[in-house]
Length: 506
Image 1 (cartoon, rainbow, N blue to C red):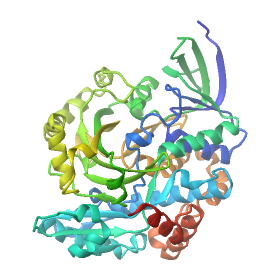
Image 2: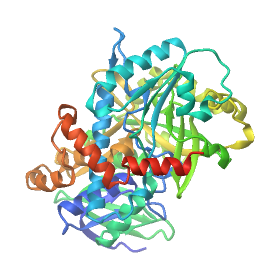
Image 3: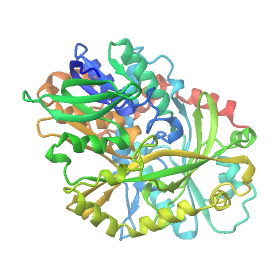
Image 4: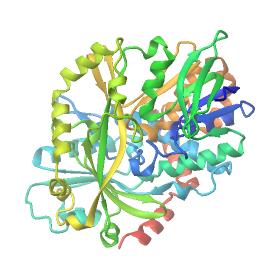
């Protein structure tokens, strides 16, 4: 059993979209730094970032209704949607920079133009959607949004969803043509191929058993080879824990006070995937509905056109499930071993508070395929059971922590960066909108962990992300300019979109 030691500047744990993004940013900012990536699985982008695990699909808050809550006075709060959209614009700018710099050759391998729609039924939800449309379409970030409650118009927008629809209840939809479908699995693999060429040391089948502080303030990782059991020690001045659901255990092992009293609650997902190419061809959009009462935000039903392995696919879901694993390839003991003396009261408070969520998850687990088909038929009235297969998606671990607003044991729906006060280690926890906002989240890591270098790095950051440090919502001209330039660079411009639409919609 070897105990070889290696020193490096930066260690990234997990070969998913977050580490891929942070590694790429750092290689642009400080090309001479040595970076090592440690991944438990044999390949990059196989867990949370994998396209079949529903890793973010271009969340720009154009259609996700859980980002636009109705306030008690009846008005619509679009502040969360603005934040998510601005963060997605940052990702688009960074990807454009990579294409212009020839670091990404063909953007169509990971991003395609696709309309984003919201769809509701019932008088109350139609009224809500109209108010939401009025609030959003007045904002420069959401220009071009259309609203209709006219069935003949809706039949043009979403023929598959309107065919054989017999119900007389009012329905409505909004549509934004500038939406996209992003394959984060493909993007992760592209970025790791690029990092390999930049001499980043990417080590697969490496399980991080332990993390501890050394006398000189660096971090030493005990790393075990999954197949051989050989142990190596890796030391670095900066460590980023980007291991999806696996990050919480590693954060706890680091022992930093900022990681205390934080817990995690795993939620698994299932999707229906259409196996009939004729039906796949009849739908060309990402369509989000409204979550059922008691359902968590990540269970908003949606019917999504996806581009996976250069092929058009159609997915419906998600149906929530429960497994105590924190990763799809994790252990059945993950949840139990994440409960420590310092987060026990937080976890118990969360359990007491979230009985409706627990009940909802149990109901979801018990659904038969026919019951799932009934939910799908709210979107596709004539859906037949033989045209759809069940796909198990990835695990999501929602953060549980004590907050001023929610009190003890509050379940967080979002992505959180937890870092040591001295910036020597940072971990990413949480779920949606995750991958879609990866660039913003990794810039936050850079800002928190490298404050001394930030000033010197700013010109390069602004070259990569022209809107860096600027509020897009207050600069409508800049929004327009960036929309146009990123769409052109990423092959999403009107001509590209029309070409794709004609090729794929029958």
